[in-house]
Image 1 (spheres, chains in turn green, yellow):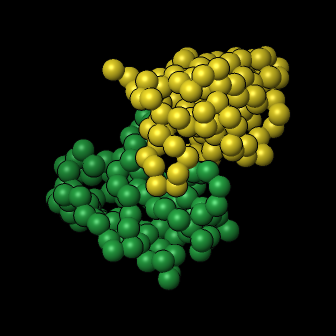
Image 2 (image 1 turned 60 degrees about the vertical axis):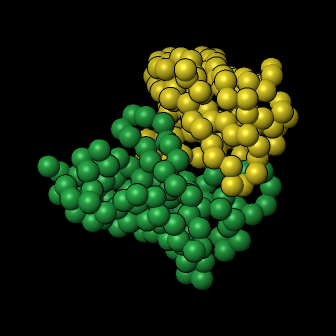
Length: 111
Length: 114
């Protein structure tokens, strides 16, 4: 079983739609959780951290469910510029920071 | 100003050759990393250095040798290149190796081994 699993998509949604991605992780001791965004042929960039209480940044909402080992990302009122691959990222509890990436979910927003 | 830079951006070479990729960060970070993104787009950590000291070495073949001459630089040397080494290699940096610290990635080096 992969450490971090995501539906690779692709997801094709119309502009203005709400879209949700899910991610599961296998290590129950995982310490930190993030969503990164990667545009085509570019480097990953941090989109937002994910906290147990849930957090929101504009149109983006992230949720963490430790009991189910499940992370979600919700994008409201999607824009064309949201088209990218969204990477679910987890860090294990021990040792130095080691980001474990999911395969990524590819999202295309259509006009 | 570029925060994390890598050279070269593209590298095409023959099997068996030795090549190096350079990485520099001007963010004042103490920790630097090398990641490999394969054709299936999985990003996996290879190495991590903190203050020039190796702290993560993820079962990478010893043909890969990182070198950190100072905190701002982390280079990757690859000996006897193989077809399976073809991938995009990303350098990254963070303030410290703490689990919650944001990592900043370089633009990547696309390596193609023929």
